[in-house]
Length: 127
Image (tube, rainbow, N blue to C red; front, side, top):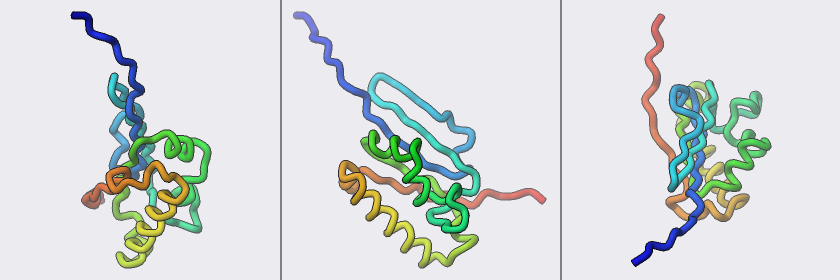
C-alpha cells in the first residue's frame, strides 16, 4: 500500500507580547505550524499617548496587521504595564474593547479559541 503525500499548509499563530517574551525566538516553524512572536518592551493594551507601545494602535500597522490577517489564532502576553497607568477596571474594559474590535476586523478570529490572553507575573526589578 502506498501512502499519499498530503501537502497541508502549516497553521499560523501570532503572539504579541511585552518584554516577557524577549528571549523567545521570533519565529518557530515546523511542518505543522508557524509561530511568529513580536515582543515590545513596555507594551500596553491601549496607550493613546504612545502608539508604538499600544497593542490597539499597533494592530493597524503593516507588519502586525499582516500577521493578524494570516493567523489561525493569536495570543497576547501583555503584563502589568497597563496597570501602572490605569486602574484594573479600565484595563479590563480596554481588553474587552480590543477583543471585540479584533473579531469585527478579522472575522476568522471570531471563534472563542482563536484569541488567547496569557496572565503574567510582574517582573522583579533589581535596584
